[in-house]
Length: 94
Image (cartoon, rainbow, N blue to C red; front, top):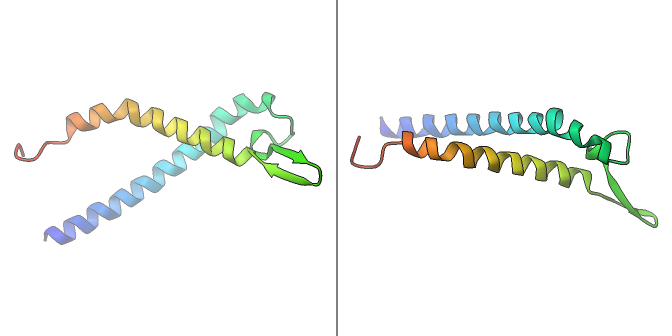
């Protein structure tokens, strides 16, 4: 019975992780990036920003978008983590 519970917990953790990934991607794409669009020099916004050296293009827009996703994720984790630690019982006090 314990192994089935662990599999269910693992499956639930994967689902929650995928849902949170989708949430943070949409949060940065729909709220944060439109605020930064006036800073970008392209019509498509900051996600399509690139630097051109001669004939080659270096796409930096995706790096900026993923960095914003990471910053938002770290901010949420640092805000929520103390409450999660308080909620989870420690070993021996169950």
